[in-house]
Every structure is written in C-alpha cells, then in structure tokens.
Image (cartoon, rainbow, N blue to C red):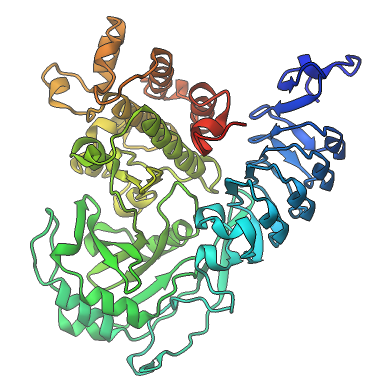
Length: 562
C-alpha cells in the first residue's frame, strides 16, 4: 500500500495511480509501474469487478498470481512484467474474455502454459518471455497465432511457435561428427550434457557441452570458400589443406534449438562466397547463410590474431551464448578453426540502423519519430539487460548505430555485445577508435582505456542524438567547426535553435517530445561519468517521459484503446 493511500478514505478514486469510472465511482484502472512496490498481489484484487487495466510492471512483487483475478471480468490489460512473481499462470486467467494485453515477462514463473489462454479471443499482445515455463506450447485458439517473440527465454518450452520439436531432440548437434558417421540417413546421434548459467538469479540459457571430433569436411569446405576473394574491406584468409586433420577444430552450439544437422550446415557453408558478405568491421567479416528452408543466419568470421587466449575466449563465449533477450542478437554457436573463429548469430533482416538511417534504407519505410523512439526504447532495454540483469554485468564497449540491427517491424537488436572485451587487448583500447567509433566514445574511456557501464551510457546518449538529428556523430558539418555531435547540440540548444536539430525527415514532431529526448541524451553524455544515469534509469525515463501515460499505446500496439 502506498504511503499516500489512506485506509480511512472510503473513496480510493483520488489515490495515486487509481482511476475510477463515473458516476458509479468503481475502480477502472490501477497504474503503478516503477513504484518500488514489494509484497504480494492480494486475492482481494478479485473484488474489483469493473477493473479494466492493472499495470504493476517493473516493481518487486513476489508470490503467485492470485486465481481470484478471474473475477475482474472487465479486465482488458494486465501488465505484470519485471517482478519476482512465482508459481504458474492460473488457468482461470482464461476466463478474462475481454483481455487484450497480457504481459507476464521477466518473472520467475514456471510450469506449463495453460491452454485456457487460447480462449482469449480478444488477446492481441502476449509476452511470456524470460521465465521458466516448460513443456509444449498449446496449439489452441489464439495461442496458435503468436510468434516466437512471445515465448523467448523459456528454454524448456517447445512447440510450433518457436519451431522446436517436442520429441526431445536438440536439433543441431553440439559437435561435428566423424566423417564416417555421416550417412545417407543423416547424422548419427551425439550424446550431450547441458549446463546452465545464472543471470541475476534467473536461468537464462543452457548450452550443449563441447567435445572434440574430426572435422575434415568442414575445414575442406572453408578452404574452398576462403581463398583470397575480395569483399567489403575484409580479408579472406587462405587456409592450408593440412589443417583439415587438426583435432583442435570444433563446432559448438548454444540454446540447443537449431533444427539442422551438421551436414546441412556444412552444405550451406560450402556455397558461401563474396556475394554473401553483408558487412565488414573491426571484428571481422559477416556473411549471410541461407538454409534450405530459407531460414537465415549471420556468420561472423574472426581472424585468430584478433582474439585473446583460447581458454578465456571460450569461457566468456559460453556466457555470451547463454544470454537471450528480445532486443539482443542471439549467439547461436561458433566454430573454432586453426586460423579463424566463426560466430553464428540470428540474422536480422533489415541490417544496421546506420545503413537504414544514413545510406538510403529509409526509401521504402521512412523512420518517423515514433519509429525512432521505438528503436531507442528497444536498444535501451537490451543494454539495460546487459548491465543490470546479467551476472556479472556485461559492458558492451562499442554501442553505435552499426551495432543496432533492425528486423522488418523495426524492432532493434543490439549486436556484438561482449566482443570488444574478447577481441581487443585490455591495454589496447585505441583499437576501438581505429574501428571507426570515435564519436561514440566517452571522454574518460579515451583517456584511460577503462570501459564501464557509464561509458556505455555515454555511447547510448550519442545514439539518441543520432536518432533525433539523423546525423552521424562525426558528421563533416561538425568537424569543420571542431565539434562532435554533443558539442554541436550544446551550441544549438544554447541558442534555442531546436528546429535545426531534428532530422528534416521527421515531420509533425511535438516540441515537448524532442526536448524530453534531448534532456535524456544530455544526461547520458555528461562529461562527468558519476553524473550520468544508469541504463535502468535511462530506460525508465524513456518509458515514463516519452511513452507515458499509456505505455501500450506507443510500445505494444498503437491501435489498442485501453
């Protein structure tokens, strides 16, 4: 109970976060996100028969979801994400026939998903991600209409929405088999064990164990592909055919749900050439790998000279491979060869924000203000997850628009997290500058080379400015004046020239919205790292100041009227 609520007051309609209908004065909405609430959700919630909206997300609530919630027969929106709720989803929730939004993500919920949810014919948004749900996703009613994004981060789930077979197979083997085990029938089974990594108390990922096997076929095919071809500035390395017998080569996968055999992966790798190169940067060349069923993956090739010690690299990679989040690019596996490492990621169709924002990617689908704010919010969620929900915390070190990838719905996915630490020496921080990200680097990082969460916050602030202005951090118009994007912004805001700041491709933008984002960016890019907010605070400000008062209108579905 909030301190401002008074038990002696018979009329709760004036309480903070409570809205009522008139003239009957029945509680219609309880909206209390980010209030640092603790305790349990009382079964008395079922007495609020006229309740339409219950928003208690981003608090510290524990206990179970009371089955009495079924009595809130008018409920349309239920937001309980990012708490510590336990137990299962009460099957009675299927009696809330008016429910349109159900968000239970990022809790400690477990058990099976009740098929009664399939009865919710009005349900238009469902998020059960990042919990401990297990078993088969019921393919009934409205449940059959939701995609995998509604269920990510529940590694014991299986079923059609996530394209994971429920018969107990792990799909993509953890290690390439001996060539003799590949027959016309496919690949012989390989025994695997599973281990888990704990992320701030939550089991976020599991992976197959690694074993050494002969990989002559894989290395031979890479020899065919990597014979000094031109590409986007990257270099192909010609490998010695004798390396095919090197027992140190191996293939490791994470999450255990790639529905392909090793031979299928090998066949596809064989066909890769310079036409499949989709990018090249400081950490290596990236290829698009298309499987026979048209599913796509990104393969990042890293020269052996770019990595640190093998034992440390692989240990850190295990941690990165265990991380799952809707706004992060999932690492699906890697292949270690004597001359290179190949990291396998989910492929994100539209490519980088940098390309989309600066290189004509907006021709088909322009980035209006709402789309840019969606990208900012999703990127903040991914980065806040790395900082605050991973244990130990992961500092990205290289936040920039080319590391924000966009899917067809313009949902952002942060890529290359953790790679800077793995692939660059601790005392060689200038390598990041050489990679072309100077404009994003915090002043203290340039001075002492020590990356922290606050240096990531600075880079995110620069990214916000890039979204608002449509200009790269080192735009020639800044450099001619001896400025970067932060200095340029300070000059224009000091002279009240707001109309010159916003990208001209953004029309009908409210001044208050721009000022709010610029205020957040200014806090993020403060020269003193101690004065910068944490990413959790940045995320909260974006959600509250930019997307409030009704989060669902801007993030979940702009057409919902709750």
